[in-house]
Structures are given as C-alpha cells and as structure tokens.
Image 1 (cartoon, rainbow, N blue to C red):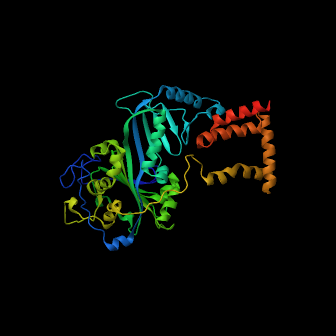
Image 2 (cartoon, rainbow, N blue to C red):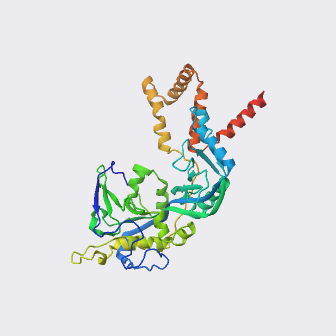
Image 3 (cartoon, helix red, strand yellow):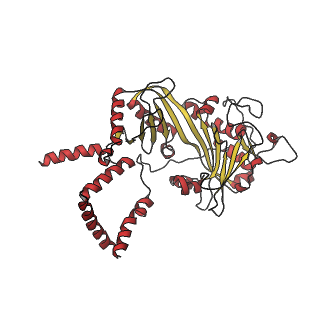
Length: 432
C-alpha cells in the first residue's frame, strides 16, 4: 500500500460506531477476551466461490518480541565501545562497528532509539537493547524479519533469537509478544474496487480507500482502524512489492501454491498490538501460536467483516457476509501446504538490479564521456584513470576501494572486518 503522499486516498467514517480497541463487546453480546471459547459463525463457502478464490499463503508476517532480563556488564561495555566506533568520523573505523553472535554478524548502529541505547541489525533481526534492568522496560525488543519467518518459521526463528539474547545477558521468563501481523495472500475473481465504505461492518472509526493514479487500475486497497491498537489492511501485494517493499522472494512462495504471474494477489492483513493481544489473552509466543486460528476468527468475525448490504434492514450487523469474506475468514482452517524459502542468508544484500544496472552507471558514463564503445577498452581505461585520480587526492586506489568495501560489508553483514584486520596484521608480521 502506498503512503498518502504517493497516491490519492479517500477517508470514510464507519457508521457502526465503536473503535479499534478489542475490549468492546462483540455483536452477539459476549466479551472478546476469550478466544478459546469462540465458535465459528461463518457460513460454509459455496462451491462457486471456491472456484473463484485461491489462497496462496497465510500465517504471521511481522512479529515483535520482548525479553525481560539484564544486560551483562561485559556486553554493556562492549556495545558502548562499538557504538562509539560507529560514531567515528573515520569511515575505516566505522566499519569495525560489528559484533558476531552465533551465525549472525550484526551491524552496531551509531544511534539508539528512545529508551534503547543499542541497536543491532542483520537480515534476521532488528534488536533494540536496554542497558538498565527495569520491571516495565524489557532488556531487548526485537523485530523478526518477515523473510526469516518465511524461511524457517516462527518457532525456529525464536529459538535462534533466544540464543542471541541469552548471549547478551540473563533472560527472565519467556518472550512476550509486542506485535503480531496475521495475513492471508489470495487470488480472487471479485472486483475489490467495487467495495464501498458501507459494505464494511467494523468496530473501527476510521477507514480509507486508496488509489494510485499512475496505474491503469488505480484502486490499491483499504486501511481500516488507522491509529488504533488493531487495524486492518486489504491491498494489492504485487504492486506493494514492486513499488515499495521489494520482497520479491514472495513470488517463489506463491508460485508453489499455483499463482500465475498475470494474476493479482491481494493481502488481507491485521496488525495487532500488545494491548489488544493482552486483552485477548495472548501474552507469550506460545499463546499466539496456540490461538492463532482463533485470533484470525475473532478478527474476521467480531472485529471486521465484508457484508452484502441490505437496504431494507437498518441493522447492519444482520447483513450477511460477502461470499469472498466467508472464504477469507475460513482460510486458517485450511490444510494448506506452505513451503519455506529455499534460499536465505542473514546478510542484507542489495538487489541484483542495483548491482548490475545502477552499478554500471559510472562506467557507462565514463565510456560515453571519453568516446569509448568497446567494453574491455572502457574498463581498462576507467581503472587506469581512477588510479591516477585517487593518487592525486592523496589516497592509493586500492586503499580507497578497500575502505569502501569494508564500510559496505558492515552494512550488508557479509565480512567481519575486525577479524580480517587481525588476520592481515598477522600476515604482515609473518612477512617481516
């Protein structure tokens, strides 16, 4: 979904009242806090609708976990030193702001975030660390990347994460869930651009319908419940991947489920924050995993549903579900074989297009400016003149390239610069 400044949004207010909080009463008068006793009220999806509806993937896409405990004094000193190194004005020194834990080579950021002075990042985890022990503030607050979840699954990812956090200090208890985004990716024959505000039956006050006027079919989706502890997004995922997230690994997973390249893929996603999860009895990760299907049922039955409006009935909560919504609400009950990503690396690598298209920009500009068309000649002349240029600036070409490689290796989590420096120093001593 694009931001407001990227395409034209139309906001609408829900006529059903209520807000985005999960603590309000359900339409049948019961409290929303007991997911385990909730019984399905969704109608059975018709065979006609099944023919038009193709689920591709579902599960947990974004997961934020918190660990209470105490950062060790040793790691507090070490991370403080690495943070200072990251703040250096010397790029070669900045490249040493890395830390290796298990199979992970983390970049140590030069700045923390409010209440968390240290930040460690690779392609698996975004870890915020608190140096002080607190009853309310966790020692670590972590976002697990959606790509890592797609590669190994929630439980394996948390086992790996717990090893990392255990290395940094002492953990008190199990991980608590700060945020979880449940999703369903699907293909359907329905024209979702025809959905209008009254069709949604929801507790949320605010909703917006989004368009991107650069597209032939400009409708891109809905956001419902913005600003609350629970909100939903229905959006065209392929457009979002191409224009924003660039998570092209999703295509491989969809293909396994029968996706054809020309098909639109819609994502129904619910972002549930800590307060909502707590009210629903979900505190720990084990709570989330055991109640995942019940949570999806609550979200798609009690909190939000897509209806077929009945102009003769003023009680909107009596309007029947749209057949598409019955299919969406029933998805977590499906026995769907969901593959894992076959290729995954903890490194944050740039896209091939950036390397092999944008990366050639300087060379092709040089060749054109010098009137050279042959690639071999152009590459040789480029290297010759580059060495002369950097020598005139007082730094050997090899030194400049080495410095830039180390800086990018820190950003990409690929080369442990400190270890390589020690190895290089030993080799030089041996040569003497």
